Image (cartoon, rainbow, N blue to C red):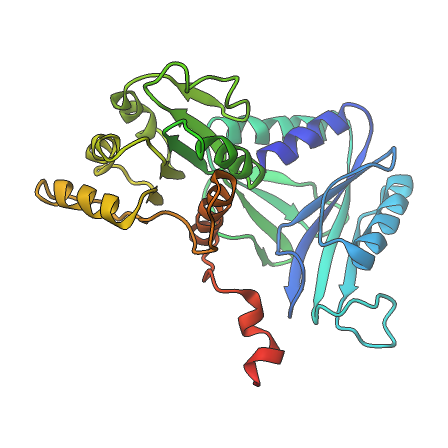
Length: 323
């Protein structure tokens, strides 16, 4: 979300931008309420509201908004009905609000959003779905998810989740890349100076080539924290977990064999206050290489963050349900 608004600010410095936002959905659709795409005056786009013919229709409508400045509520029907203009077969419908953002007022609002998110604050952007009112920010009564209320879209703007990767070895390198793509801010910690470097981890916002005790003050300041222990040995895991047992991370995962995990558990249980740990870390996808293991870990991070099941989607498809 932070990166999206940074892109929006850059675009607004050049010209007007149409912001297309999903305001409501019904049935099976490719994107959720609050999903956004920007359409710039030069025809370039950023973000997506689902792709395909539905997105193509929004793009064409946005070009009109760029010309006349008139806000629009656009319906995308993906029910597959033959009489419909768009032959999508997801099974549902989406409503999208198209609004022109331009000038200093829009840029100032976007810069304020960027400042709030970058500093770890949570706010809501309020978008009245009428032709007269403008979007604005609200700092109180922030919902957990976007919602449509009284013809007004209320969207919580949350700081991006942070993934603290403890251990800067072979798994950490692809994990940092993949998690960054998935929307996580990355912090790396390892006490080995030759491993914990910005050259090895260009996607990290912070690289700590320091003892594990250096993370204590940092993690206390992060509210949306996920932690992956991919250290070089069980002694490093124990040292890290002794510090992490009092933190409020949403996820702590630890790499290792069953024997290694059991050893760490036995050493820590005697001390009490053992935090909930996902160990061995990751989803079971048969991963073997560091890159595959990183995919497995990131899949579990997304599962925890979004509330998924981790099951194969094909298991719940109609062709398998009725077997």
